[in-house]
Length: 146
Figure (cartoon, rainbow, N blue to C red):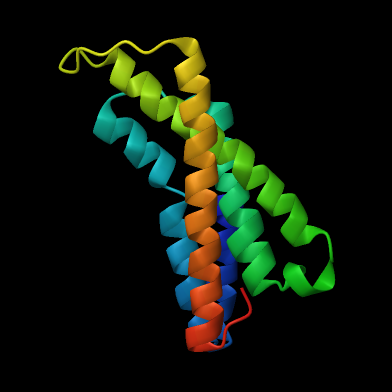
């Protein structure tokens, strides 16, 4: 909640200073921070609070501090740290997807631990590769510096 309150404060300051783009981006970041809660309610699974905090912290660090507060250019290591963290988070997300499938009674599949680990690794690798393609496309097409 503290990170979300910081984002609300930043949105208010952006509106007061008529910085509409920052206000819009910060509002979208606030919405993204509610995704773990929506995921938990939608699929009726328990998402550990530590994982929720890690996801919200990552969104805060990458989008708010990285993009809006320009940490990507201030600190040379910021992008490296976030890429490392995203790999771990995507691996955990891949594990959770398989876990949900294993626990769902409608799906009669029970996967071995080795496959679960392999899937989590490949999921993180695949989504990470897609993200890099997205960044490259945004930089090339829209002239951004992602």
